[in-house]
Image (cartoon, rainbow, N blue to C red; front, side):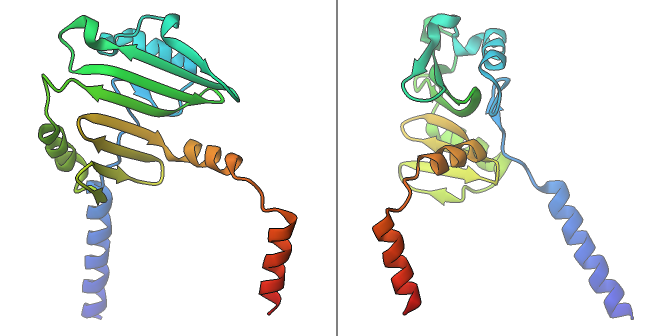
Length: 180
């Protein structure tokens, strides 16, 4: 009986500590959150001068479906750590944030170290990039110095919609092979 109690206590302790110390990835930067509408994103960009947002002249409509792109240039402000930023929308939902960081004021190793400290070791590490992800967000630090946030759910929806269905020949071929 004591062994079962100890096992239950240890299991519960591990579960609680994993829950308490698990860190979620950020769903955006500087008040701008993935999944936000174009209008909400514009409001947040206006509140944070680090992005260098100039209003509707920074907004473009991409060819195709209901896609919008906001591009900002923070270099004109001089004191920011950001350079250019892009905010991509699909059906009025922000699904990608791309931030170029000013390499004259910040370095890759400093950002990489801070991200590791906050979110643990990256799940993928190559000479070109480090990547952290969970079910909702993929965060990537790329060289020379670009930080990307992607809403996995919206991105997967876009990919699913863009897939071409198999031709009748491919379907019948597959059925034939399955019948063997």
